[in-house]
Length: 359
Image (cartoon, rainbow, N blue to C red; front, side, top):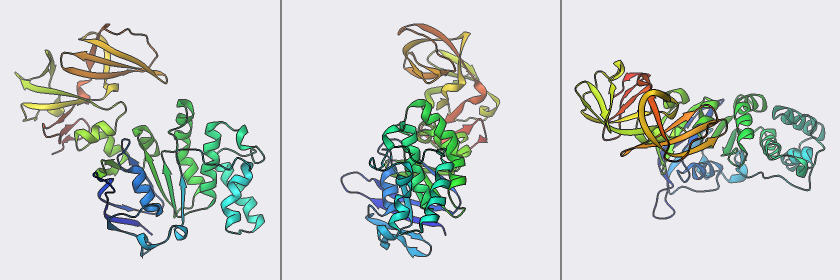
């Protein structure tokens, strides 16, 4: 019961929204479509749902030409960015709505709704009015209404994007359990997001999408540890992986007057000029480090993101506590050299700290 697509393309204007997209989604699995805004994520989900028809390509499900199956015959549930609930109905009635439309037996409706509400942590909220709920609770109602249908395909289009930081953190941690409790083992879950942390938390297969093209497909851990290109490295990290123009001279990595010892995993690097990659979390404040100037300091949840500059080199480092800095402050930082990446000038990954030689 795989959902299989081959070479889906959709170009409603001068730019491709989908460009030769292929995938094989298997039942019982969670898939995350990871990409920036306007990368084609929503277009892909709408194509699967039957709300858009691609210009070319094929899509099959249960041995049927899925592109020819009408929207109302596709056993699909969808959760949107906005909280789409019925304000005149209470929580129970909102979740029960699709079952009543299908004329499901009233006793079965009661059992299914209670089970669905329990799976999303809203047990006991059955008689609450929608207006009495927080944003996170309203999104849970939307999710429960989608789960109760027991659809074969569940589509979630950036469902956490409109929630505040704490609610996003909470729901992100709960989603995997919600899916396992609220769906049958035959269901396919397809979750779109701009946030790589959500992709890592769900820990399923990740499809990195950019400008309508699939850049890389693989387990979340593989995408994180071995991004095939600079673009994947930027998309799959938040903040994006720092990329620095560097060269090797006298057995040292050099850029902007900085010299770093070549770590063992980069010892076979042949390119004299290359792109050095390092995550914000792998740069730390150090009194014995290299001096940079603060361009911006921003608080993100419980951490501080420092935007730093030295000559033409711009980097971001994350500090796992809230700290105060002023623009133009001088700070010293050091790099965890065992976490360095090397990318060719073309943007292709050469060496990863998690796998040695890659290409």
